[in-house]
Length: 423
Picture 1 (cartoon, helix red, strand yellow):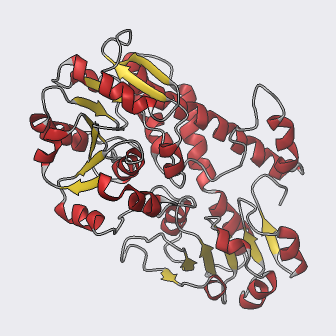
Picture 2 (cartoon, one colour):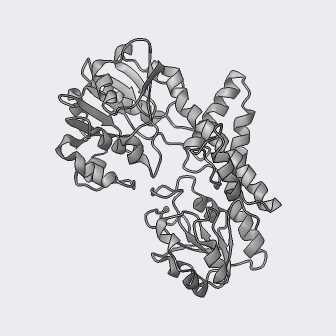
């Protein structure tokens, strides 16, 4: 897009992926962060995050993509996105201080006509309070998904834009940039846009909670959830894109953060937040599926087993272990010896002295009473069942996502278990 400069202030996951995707549409993209070390790594091609396709997308940006720790470089930008990831505490409560700090830092550096756009996930009312003229102040919903962020950034389904007056046209530079992606643009008031992202996650939480509840009923009644799923996908009211894969609660933090945020708002405003509290309670319960299964199948018979873990990341395609089932399991069983492997994820150094890391999946299961597949990385699918059986001391395989070939495991004398099927 000739003559347009777009900047992203805050180079965490959101800012890096968004900047790389924008470089496909603009002559110049500036990635700004006050952390000079992070900027130097990005300039040298060292990415601080794991995301499929991101390295290639950054390389494709070439000279159109500039990384800097000089806030003054933002003076030349037509559009400036505030794009820092919002941290949350252990209870899922958002800490907006980093967002507020970066807004305060960049605003004096902007030209008078530059459009400031908050891309971070913030509660209703945040953008309206920013002391900048309404004609150059907007909010935009981010819809990136860990492990699919590049795809989502390059091919968005729609843009949800919050404005002081949604009936007025967007600034021409902003409209040109969004239009270049070829998807619908949905303008609305600030508060509606800020709440829209949360609303999306709440509907996803409803699907996940319903799926997990019904899958567990299958486990205790002799039904098989995988046999039921096709009937739901063919129902137009539910559909083929519904979240119907059973899981271990709500990992990653984003949906949990939104549940916490809306529960707090409901309490403050005197509305009913019982549904949200039920989602949170179910998520906590589901995270303990592996723990309950280990106690029932292994630890009641052997109090000090060795347990092998395939996967530490909360999902494939990311290095993040934020709210991951692996962390919950390791924390709940501090006296159990764990052997683990993961192709990209790392846990805090010294945080789990009962954990030993390995690179090879088969070596990881050697001598183990049980194998737990917590992250369904592709490389685990091809592991030889016979080799697994020969290396393990026990026979128990907890494969909640049914990632492995369970029929082949059974033929090798192993006893696999999965979510949604009678154990």
